[in-house]
View 1 (tube, protein in one colour):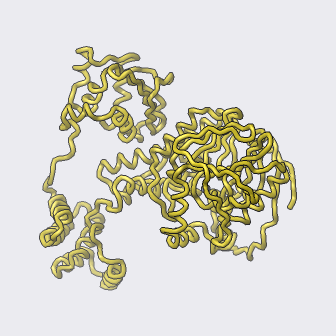
View 2: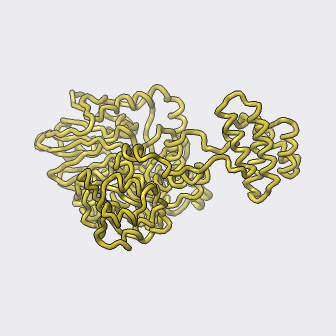
View 3: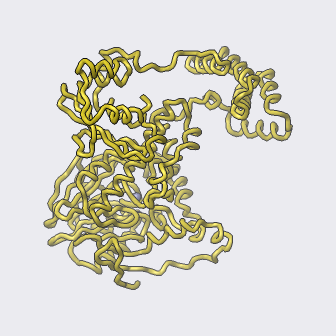
Length: 573
Ligand SMILES: [Zn+2]
């Protein structure tokens, strides 16, 4: 072990505790040559070091996948997150013990993930230390450990490259590597839990734990009001976030994630100390970073919903989704962990579940059968249309539908392709005893034939009573999903909406491809719409004419009508 002092932009003082990492295997020239330089450069974030981003706040980076944070009080220390194993926790504790010998008087778990909870016993040092966590953290640990343990283990081993050589693995995006071993777990279960917010005073340190759903439902952040220090848990780190993780996860409600980041922004922290990657110092830097991060998440959510409402499925949305350039280039939003494409699929699945709406995917052949047919079709080397027709004639309808859908996609102008698809769908639907499936096949057949099967959704058809019952929050927040992002990449403009019947004001801020909707009278608004909530809902649903409402005085505009009209023109409806 060597100790050295380094000064970086982000830190007042730095203590480094670096241990030699064992024998890198023979470096494969091929692997090294093919590895992207930016991925190699990203490893610099995980150099093993203890940083002190604020007085009495220390963060151990590079000891395992996650960071562990020590907050020093008058007569004790608080540990926030405990690493993924006994071994990693011991190394962190030794580094902290080089700074202070005060006893550990509390442990905080920011969430249930293995890289944060499995070294608790080590930090407790054999004593009865309170462990603070959200009320749902214990249940979430049990689910991963027990219910789906085998599957999550296999998937995690692949995702974290546990079997790979260091050269192949390079880093794990949010840390150098996962140092988890099932036999090396030292869990201390939560003893003190809360639901929304918990104010604590421990060893003379005031801290607030705030439930902040995001990367997990049980996520919390730690706010040190006297020091202006925010520990955001895993809701932000220096890579595009894991809105979905390929190792498998229940749906992560990304709208709540955005809300959690907004709650952090409202605190105006001076220092941000995440549980992965490195701290950021400076109120301006932290605010700009939290804003960019929440915008990226909202963008993926809103534009995925917008494309789904336009009829696209997850494969199509994943192929199209791309962050606005200023976010795509942001150093904290590079795709080293999550990606916008995986995230878009997850948002789609969160709203619609596994069925993507493509009729060919409703009841496909079993994978092995499908593989045999695909191999045989390639070997036969005949045109896809010919094979699709033959499958219809043979009554091989699942296969026929799949081939005809590929044919239709490959040749969207082919009336013949659509006709064969329609035939296959009709035969499949007519013989189907399940009404849901039957109706879907037969309707899809009509659509393939171009017979407008049903009238498109018309928001103005909703009754005034239904509109009156719709909460204004829901109505305003849905605006984000209707933003024409592609037309607003250079727009930075806000309008306030004052609802006189409710005494409530919302500010809608279009910021380069994202519409942030907050209930507040934003100083940044350059125009103001004043009306009742029902009048605004009826205008939004095209049930009431805005010009008529202006003429009658039901609607008033401050700051210029043209400006407001241009602003509203940035939304689909
Ligand atoms: Zn983590």
